[in-house]
Image (cartoon, rainbow, N blue to C red; front, side, top):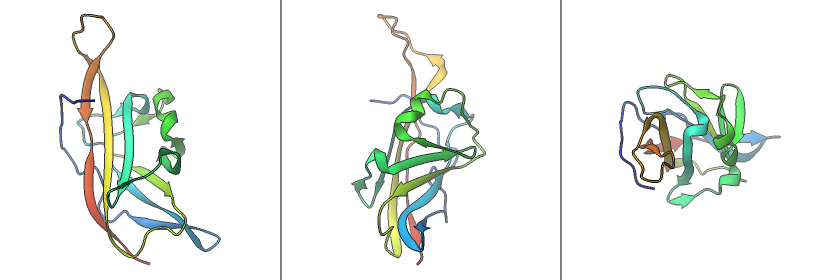
Length: 146
C-alpha cells in the first residue's frame, strides 16, 4: 500500500512509556503508548494496517492488543470498531504478549499505522470507493528499566 499523505504533528511513539508487564510477579510482556499524528481524530475502523516491530523483529499480530477508551482490541478487530473513536489528544496503549518481557536497556519500537481518511475520496474509474491513505507510522528508541 502506498500513501499519499503524511502529517507529523506529534511523535507516534510516546516518550517514557515503555515498561514490562507482569502477571503473578512474572514478566509476561510489555506495553507502550502511541499517539495519532494527525490533525483530527478517527474511528478505529479506518485503520488499514497496524503492525509492531521491536528491535527489527515484527511482533505477531496475535500478540498485540490495541487499548483505547478503557477497551481492548485485537488487531483483526480494528476494522470492525466503527463506533470507537480515537481522539488526537488521547494516547492509545499497545500491549504486547511476550514471555520474559524485554531486557533492561534501549529498544527500537517501530509502529506501522496506515489509515484512510473517510472524508477524502479519491477518483476511481471503477467507482470502488477508495479514500486517501495516510501514513501514521512512527519509530523511536525507548529505554526500559527493571
